[in-house]
Image (cartoon, rainbow, N blue to C red):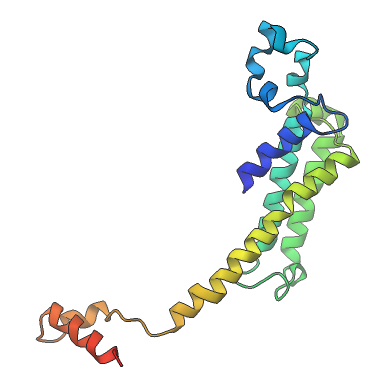
Length: 186
């Protein structure tokens, strides 16, 4: 999801943001042909492809998703509802520090030049949040599947014999496997 979200954020800005160039998908896909000109490029300002907004959107979505993934990592299988973020205050401090540093490079002009990014508007931040939040839902779904199907399967008796037990008796390994399965069949 991370890759799709990052690409979508840059695409969203180029196609749909109120302050974006409102390009078509074809123009985005063929942006490298813009400077050569042609009928299909009439009315398109090629400098739109040099704008730092798509890169800033992509970076902001990446940072936000990774911070949300850090929250998701509080537990491998427990939901954020059962294990809320405040159970690990150091993680919250780290996320706050990371987001503060990200804001610093976005809103301090000197860093805009160094990182070749630009400040985001409220509309752009709302898009960053909307594009980033589904990662929590996806991870919650994966955790649900793990709790429901994988963990439950590990707790039930396995049909496979213990590997070391194959070599501890006088029976051949095939006889042991057959005997093990026969013992577990009702």
